[in-house]
Image (cartoon, rainbow over all chains, first blue to last red; front, side, top):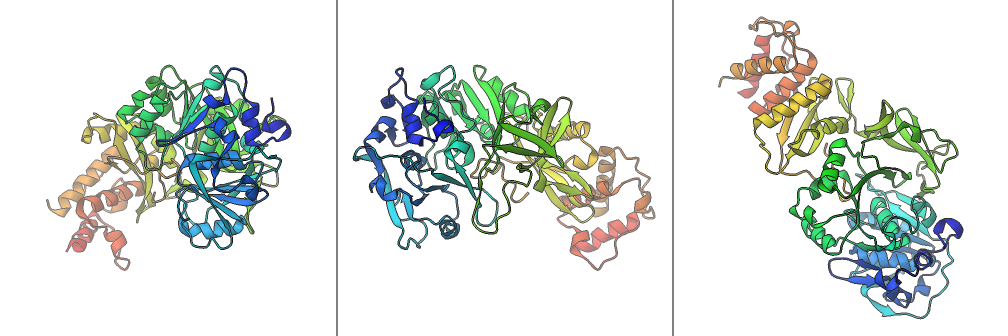
Length: 469
Length: 81
């Protein structure tokens, strides 16, 4: 069986190569709320309104509204195009001209009548449709295609992070697992972001199918549909999961595998998921767009074993320097695209994740982000370490800890809390939570004020919104 | 409720929460001798801003910062006018 790690076949060749007697390609599919594409139909059909050969060797911006359209374009154009830029739908239209210029975009794939920015120029505009048109027999797919992901930075033009199928698929086991190719994958992420793309590639390279969320689809509707489609493997951030577990439709799915990534998975969300889906194996993974997938943790405990660090010569090397986790592996992104970008990889070959870890016993625990520190009169507080304590309270569904300006100490710590459904959100709840915090944390880390809120903002990337924190 | 009562009750509450022995408060009590540290004051100022809608520490940059408890109360009373 051919895999991208062996001799760099294209995604399509890897999909068809992973096919075995047990399951016809025609029984594998990609589905959103409106449309279904059977993978076998892509052998003699195309979602694009120009022959794929027109895009051979080109730099292509995939800027579709629907994930399904992007998925089809990725399958069709890997090995054909020189470069594929995956544009998440929430990228500000104002940033697109700069992204297109940096990536030397020559063609734009869209499922809309027009793209959000006027400067098409002499670029080829390619319409994508989920209703495939028939195409000539397969051409060769031998180009080494760059896959460009946009980072979800809070401000400014997104960074363009260069991967290829080999770096993206480095953590993926091919055609294994108890379910083999009957797996139905899904994710709360958008597949045009690293976390979602990992799930898309697991579905495609592992021989399964995939349920995609549709633009604007509510969490409950999506879960109901995923349940009807028989989802077996599903992933999201801890924020995604906290929100999902608030939905009655969370009972509509019965996954074999539930995965968390993209934010710190604290013990309470791991325990809650395991209790909610007792038949599922619950794993949390560490990955970032720049560093790639570093590891999966499947023992149900927060943090990761110290034994993962410092294993020279292993496919993924980890080290902790200045308290932050650093990663060197073939799954690291290759580089940033564009001039005057700082190095993605340090001189030692490691990517600095900016994620601060602390050692407790035989395990490293994630403490927070280097950039997210609250300074209380010179004492440092990571919002995430306080949230982890608050989230241990059984009546708390989710929490956000943020900085509040103080004329006395520069900043103080305050918290917002979403109570679980049916929980008594009266004054006694905040008193109890403050008691927990005082027991577990030094005084400067204890929130000076706690506000009960109905919900917390989650970014398009599925992470708790800390932009105003 | 008079501002002084509100302030007094926050001093008592925060001292209790932070496990600090609070001195008997009179107008002459120096804030530095009250038993409260700067974190306590930061919390008190934030809570008073929530409760009274004013933060005289941030609002006025030329005013002299209070030294005694009596000054502190006056600081808020003046800002509330």
